[in-house]
Length: 343
Ligand code: NDP
Ligand code: GDR
Image (cartoon, rainbow, N blue to C red; front, side):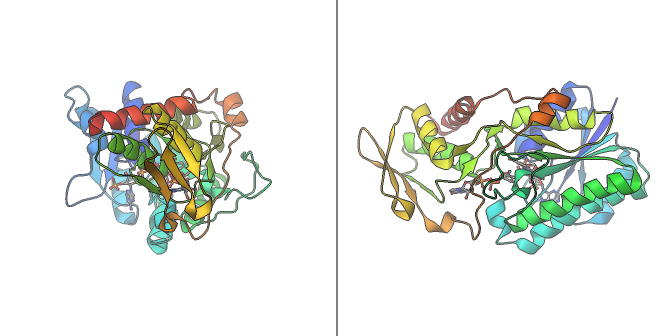
């Protein structure tokens, strides 16, 4: 039985990847942080499943604590390591820049060193991101060849983790690879990322639990796919003969405004927009009720305006392609939140 070690097992991608690996008969080891209340909601269905729970083993550790990583890697001696843990919120990285650097950036080299010093001949996946590109004008669609220009402490920290992954591959011959993933979402997406914030708001507004939704930049464009599709790509990257870096994306881009329109439409509401900039508002076209407004507090000190991926290399070499399209993704998320919030 192959052994995989995941950091970030309690996150969105960690939960999908755990399911994917269990389906392929792996034993899955996950590194979890200590919380005052448990934060395992996304994997509780696995931990409580009598047929699966013995194949998922959790270890306390932290990406900011090299000794914990070294102990776990030395004890488990995994075949594959997926470094998914991070302070992963771009906006929050402006509020906690130093911690973001330590966890999201330096965490990567701590884990690589834990593998190297324990002499574990495993394959290493680094969760790299389209935020590395920074969305510079004239660079889209972005591929493995597009120059990097991160625009946040998060992006800069991920840039460091990207390059040490390449460096350990070249310096020590390690099987270390980056997946440069564009935004991927799901009903398990963290509630403060824009897609989930929108789909929760739609469900709550419909159920009479929220009045309206306040957002920041409605014009930002993102290449949004379904997280369940992307974890297969992570695994495929580690099954290749040679370690290489790959972009995973849908090859489409949409604005935050479009995501809103589709999300409200999935619940039977049509948005009518009025005004512009911070004065823009979205009304229910039928009743005239305010549904969306703009609050400057959700703007970032620097913004990535356009992310649009080109995953031709992954399609050719990995045989990977997204399965869930944009409208189906939005509907899946709205439907799931409507179930949770009652209507
Ligand atoms: P989430 O924010 O949902 O999950 C992050 C995970 O990291 C959680 O399990 C969290 O644990 C854990 N974590 C955070 N800090 C630490 C730390 N110091 N030590 C150990 N664990 C820690 O992220 P996603 O699942 O969405 O993303 C997975 C990875 O992929 C991240 O690295 C992200 O930056 C990257 N990425 C994500 C994309 C996306 O669109 N989702 C796109 C490209 C890259 P806890 O539950 O304790 O908070
Ligand atoms: P992103 O995701 O920054 O792309 O990072 P997020 O959903 O936070 O923002 C996407 C875009 O929407 C704009 N926006 C808002 N964002 C949030 N969170 N809240 C709002 O109210 C709001 N209004 C507008 C943002 O300004 C931005 O332009 C995600 C994370 O998963 C990273 O870890 C990952 O690396 C990248 O995707 C690829």
